[in-house]
Image (cartoon, rainbow, N blue to C red; front, side, top):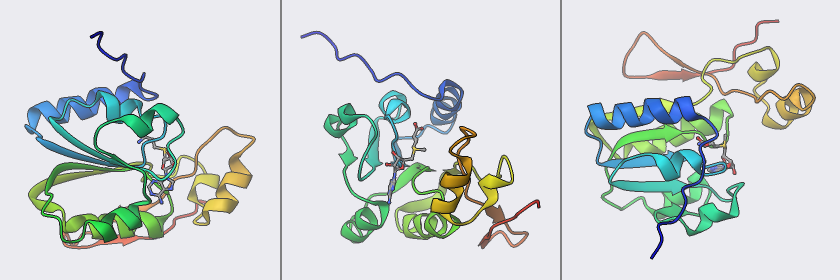
Length: 169
Ligand SMILES: C[S@@+](CC[C@H](N)C(=O)[O-])C[C@H]1O[C@@H](n2cnc3c(N)ncnc32)[C@H](O)[C@@H]1O
């Protein structure tokens, strides 16, 4: 049977960096929250992958192995008791600081001492991206073609992170 064509990645540089990390860290189990068109998820080279998205933009994502068509809150709530431990976790779902913070805290249960998290859009790329309200950020940026960013600043205390919005205006 012919091999299925992979979904092309929207962010080839991100994918390259992820696959570099996966190889260097010998990642066996990968979790991606927020799949978009699915090009990252489909092409990361981890042996075991779990993807979570209630409504992936590309319908082909629905049929990929390891995909859960759930919000991240639903996924973490349903899998609370699961013994899944991920080596690498990409948080790229709802980009509000509150949701990203909740995804991070919920994913701690599925982490081990050397789990690595990657959190997308941590630094706002412009003033609109720093608006903490998701809907407002989208309305204001829709003509700019920019995406809003969540803001999670690592604190000097390594045991906690601050989820707060920074505005530059
Ligand atoms: C920026 S895209 C993800 C891009 C993808 N990680 C990539 O590398 O191509 C954000 C995705 O988050 C999804 N999303 C929205 N609400 C969500 C939620 N509550 N939980 C998980 N994902 C969510 C959207 O459907 C969208 O597909």
